[in-house]
Amino acid sequence: MHTISLYNTLSRKKEEFKPINAPFVGLYVCGPTVYSDVHLGNCRTFISFDLIYRYLSHVGYKVRYVRNITDAGHLEGDRDEGDDKFAKKARLEQLEPMEIVQKYTVGFRDVMREFNTLPPSIEPTATGHICEQIEMIKEILENGLAYEKEGTVYFDVEKYSKEFNYGQLTNRKLEELLEGTRELSGQEEKKGRLDFALWIKAKPETIMRWPSPWGWGFPGWHIECSAMSRKYLGETFDIHGGGMDLQATHHTNEIAQSQACYHKTPVNYWMHTNMLTVNGVRMSKSAGNGFLPGELFSGNHPLLEKGYKPMAVRFFMLQTHYRSTLDFSNEALQASEKGFERLMDSFKTLQTLQPDSSSDEDVKGIQDRCYEAMNDDFNTSVLIAQLFDASRIINSANDKKTKLTKEDITLLQKLFHDFVVDILGLMVEQESEKLDSALATVMELVLDIRSKAKTGKDFKLSDEIRDKLNHAGIQVKDTKEGSSWKI
Ligand code: AMP
Ligand code: ZN
Image (cartoon, rainbow, N blue to C red; front, side):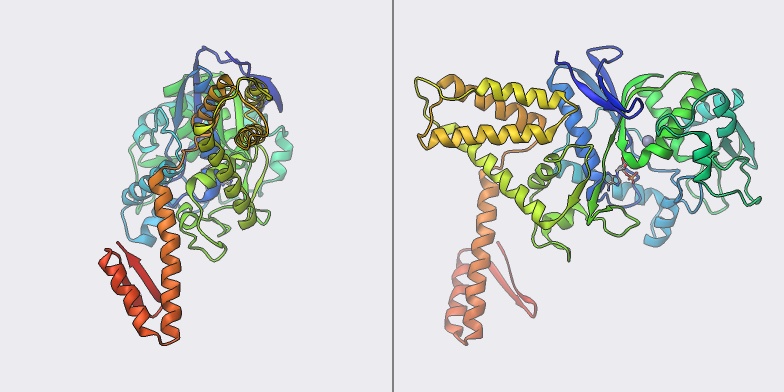
């Protein structure tokens, strides 16, 4: 088994990865809140953990990968202020809250498939685990670390802090955390500024509600992950992940809930991905700078110069290490697209490369460095640089400048299969996709010639083009905005 070192947010250093029960590994990743479409920033986090899942599996671990679906209990503010996101969206779209959940869950899974992320082993929903959440809240209440007010149950952060370190994940003292929050106005039910809701009393109009010992209500956002990770991975498990925006509140509260409930450290390694930004600003639903994957694939967005294929976007994301910020721009995407094509072209060249009897290259050295990069906190940036080196070797041998033996070629094929297809999860483009893309380019050209003919009043030529295309089974439709075509 490889020795993998990974950066643990909890200890703030790289540590050797030692699973509790090797070769089994428990991996929990906070999934999407399905009240709207996932944006590209969300996808970055899920693609990063897909890579980690793929690599751990590749080196021989049996990973149970749990990624939840948050389909209830998420209020607009992290500390239980504001509207219920699902109820608000349901009103806006004139749908049932569960229709909202279904619509965006289906959309999320489609996007994940486009990006070739593997399905998790278990994808539990918050609404499917209400009993487990209620049980956990009862245990926290019994341990005296929560209190009920008018049908809502709050976690008592200050009392918890007397025994445990609440700010351990962000390395902050309680006083510092308190400074960052608003004074209570005196109107609130909660006792302390940092207290958060475990269970929220339903308003008369709340549709998504369940009976509980405290009356009708719904669970707070944080308790679902504690309850579901405990159920499927045990009271202490190996890796818990998510975007770094979840560190200060959601994950901090998860640790507190689990410790308060069963007095154990729930997670050994906390891993956090850095943010995808646009012009330096974090991509988010609220900032209004959240590209949707569909917009990126079609190019249908004012900030986009063209459309990009899902695999080129995946490659763009993986070229940067998951702990660095990644800024989104047309230039950066186009550079990645070119790099990706170069890599894929050399993969194809490799299939037809003729071996020599001697070698000028150290292919095994490249393979070792690829593993070294991945074992060093999943450093895909260094890995891809090594793959470009492999690509250079292939092209040089193809140009007869250097030599490669049969064994070299076999090892290079394995290298591409392992690292490009299996680990980076980049699908090699099918011939049919290439043909589709070539046809689109040719049609753009033909319709442009026809439009120029029309402008020059050469209607004979423009009609001839239309009729011949029609004859070939391609229908051209003219509208005020221009011409479109379909087969
Ligand atoms: P949400 O649906 O908002 O709960 O987010 C789902 C996941 O996406 C969480 O792990 C977030 O931390 C992550 N996330 C949100 N915004 C970004 C971003 N701009 N870049 C990377 N990850 C993000
Ligand atoms: Zn979570």
